[in-house]
Length: 562
Image 1 (cartoon, one colour):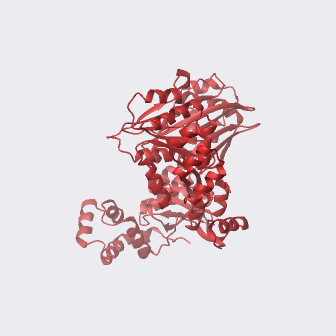
Image 2 (tube, one colour):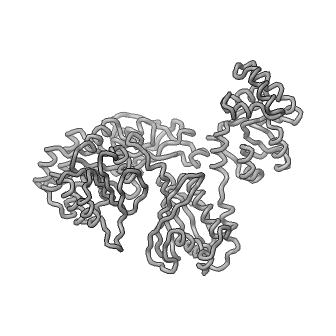
Image 3 (tube, one colour):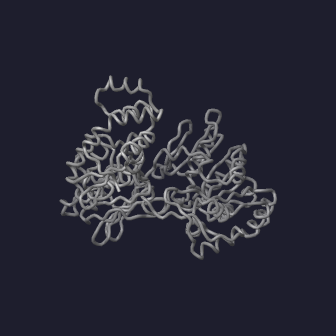
């Protein structure tokens, strides 16, 4: 229940607030007198926060005591969509408030500064009903505004006037305020706000579906009329410097700025049964600066991996399916190297993030620059460390192996199910066993699992399958695990963010000997287990034990070789 304040109460509160501030010991009478002298009747509490004399939380605590207003945790509060419609986003941001719920005759609003009379008057007129106030931290209000005000209705309105699906020219001639331009801008901004890694724009029989991949899982966000497909895809192609008349598979890239932050968008298009679809990969450059400590390595595993990276030459393989975080691990690895004393060169397709002090080469197959030809050229550029974005073919594999054998440290990604499978992937590509044995220092396999939301986590009984899997792997009985009940912070999924699970295989002398004798992958895996290798499944279950993720999430994401 909010506080039923009136204007008279708030008018009298200014003097009372000053008394409470002095009595609390947070502010001296001299400080208040100086502020009042310089600013007249301006609101004292907010001025003190702006000057850094008190914190927003201290002001909120004083307000709660002074006006007897309840407080609310906006990270877990379920906000009514109908309430959001009464206060436009622009005004919510201007006054740093957010509407919460509608009662029979009032609108409950969260506010950081409950003694701001002007804001209360404005909200009362705008909502055309009485305002009940609750206190919330200013930063939580900003986050709640970002989470809850969605642009999907405006996106639908932008396309409501487009009747014909044959409107490629609209995108070509679009001005900054054209519907298709505004709609695409909103789609991208909503994806970034939602922490999406990918945007899927997919035509169906009678509609255009837009989905966001958040923490590895796709969520449908908006459904548009099918007439929006042609202009929207054409607009995307123009921004990505692609040919709008060519409906064969194409790739491109463009950049946008959101709140002074540069975001790269990688685009891929292809024609389906109902028309062209596009997938936009959102590349937030801030994620490129992650260190190895932030990726989720267990302490012993991180120590093994750092020893591999400390080798003067040889090859380190990173394996996993698409979306398993291989590129993030590779980038975190080269981030830790001395760029001033070493020549670090990468060959990538595409270059997802750009780094200072590192020479990055973009593959261009049409111009004859492939992984193989790029690697061959790099060898003449005096490199110390070489990063190969992906070993896809026999020629690239053999050149990378030769580079590792001739005094270079080579980091490369391959598609394989586990760390042992990476070694056999090189054999499948035609590399001789004695070369794999001599060149490879170690192999890392990884998967991404979702983190339990810290704002709505609670102990809960796990499903039988999850309990049995945990018991089998960790050899201990446990029935309750941390689960997220769903809240505003995690979009009611119960998960917020992801962490990697790793399998680290240092290639020992005994494993080298086994490779030369042509034994099976199972035998090499058995030997690695004897030498202390922690399986990916066991690594993931350690994160379950630490209440980072859940048994069911591990079973969903982590491939078990046993």
